[in-house]
Image (cartoon, rainbow, N blue to C red):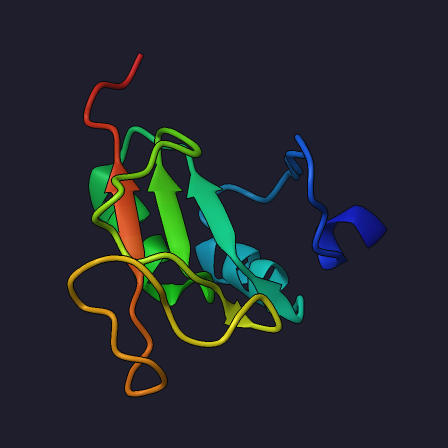
Length: 108
């Protein structure tokens, strides 16, 4: 799917089906893109969401929310979506890959 492979700037959300329990297949599909600015995981299972957030190749992972950031959190993507991070106390360019995870604990 073209839209899931490109880095779109605008209000775009790709929702795709997957077989129940095929988390590794979903991760493979999500990580095959050459971009990795941000991603979102929506689930009632916080353990699964945290597992997925560790495996996603994206600079920011939102859990049960999207685009709610803390100004103190580092910002930047992985792969072709940016090199290094800016903002945040841990800004250290090119020394390590830092992931920002935003969790909304209220699920409906």
